[in-house]
Length: 479
Ligand code: BES
Ligand code: MN
Ligand code: MN
Image 1 (cartoon, rainbow, N blue to C red):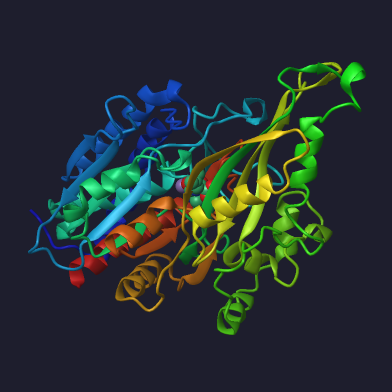
Image 2 (cartoon, rainbow, N blue to C red):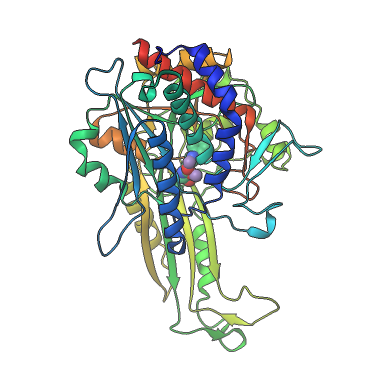
């Protein structure tokens, strides 16, 4: 017999079925859905099918839809729906991603990345029991919190999502730039515009046992710059000192990206940056974040607290733009020695952006800045990989209030209001294209090793998230 949604009942279902849900999550984690490498395309499809099956078993109408074009197919997107115009509450669009980052460097994993392990913390490790696998927290484990809440609601009431109206969209290219997402969203503009708000669980908490709502993420502009010199590799004895070495010249250019105060030197870079308000700076200060403690976890002393002068670590991560070199290659990198001046050298350079900066403008300004510094006789090849604007969501919305109540009921703690330095391209896209705001409720920790070897998700975090999503479904049913 179907009953109406009650939180204690949902929480009891979640607790009872947790072993089953965790076993399913482990199955999902075994699928190596690395989106950036075409060799894994079949696995990406399998991971999408897996999620669609899970949603179907919770009573939703789910489909695995193709993206891209015939010539250049993308990874599929899972779309699922339940409820209709008569359903109570706002129409929520849940977004998550089933793709993961590449697992390399493989030799640094203590257990295989796609063979998830559940274990207690080792000696010297903070926190509790955890699941270790690529994608454990980013983002399969966090999507699973929502899938578990949906399953509990269906089992408790025999009605999908307990009667709420939902659209679920699970992307397979978040980790590789979301190239096919915008055309997909635009092709479904009419349908997606009906959603009132987007909910994403792909961020973190303020700390262990400190749940949070993230009200802003940074944008990203990702580029690659290749500096070409001679039309061939050269003997460094014969040619060294006679012509440009593209590695040295590229390094000289990149070293000019920051001035002595660690400000980015590209003209106009800060023009559109929205200044931090005194109110925001005071609110962040009150969160009592210890940058020294955070640095310690990654093996650095307090002296390593460096960045743009005049701002705290938290302000630099949440509210200021940055320029970073993410990779640099050139010349001989194999074993032993080889005396060579290579024909070219290249670097991946990305920029994290804050509210009101445009990724296109920043990329254009950076490319001009490179050209203005072209080393004598050399030539640039400048590649614009991908980008997306940052987002800041209003903190006084009824949706955010209801997510806050849900987290309080689920964890006993009112969530902190935080921002994140990471990027989630869909949020800016939904705002720009459909006018939809996003609520980020995430349960990761800053020592989860997101994108790194030995990525983990702690079970206490998973539980808090599953309970919070269940409470959010109750909020929807009651509004
Ligand atoms: N989930 C992360 C972003 C994130 C992590 C936000 C932790 C807040 C806290 C997401 O999957 C991610 O890694 N995004 C990429 C963006 C991208 C375009 C490849 C990023 O931020 O580098
Ligand atoms: Mn993610
Ligand atoms: Mn990620």
